[in-house]
Amino acid sequence: MIEILGWLSTTLVLIGFGLNAKGRYQYSMISWIVGDIGWITYDFFINNYSHLVLSLVIIAINVYGIINLKKYR
Image 1 (cartoon, rainbow, N blue to C red):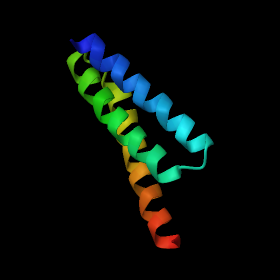
Image 2: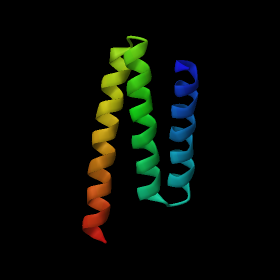
Image 3: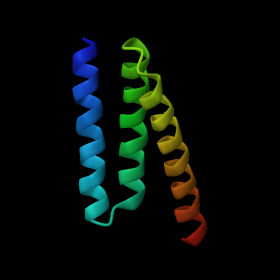
């Protein structure tokens, strides 16, 4: 089950890259946030705390990005 979570999280992050490449920035950031929430859960269960912290930082960056997109629209 945890393996499926890892692959699902990877898929969401990759979808985010595709959306970003198409200029769908807000949707890409949302996809990255959801994918990283999955990675945080995955990392917690496998005791990979360095990647867990990285995912938290990436989520914060993406939330900041969404706020900035809304501010400039």
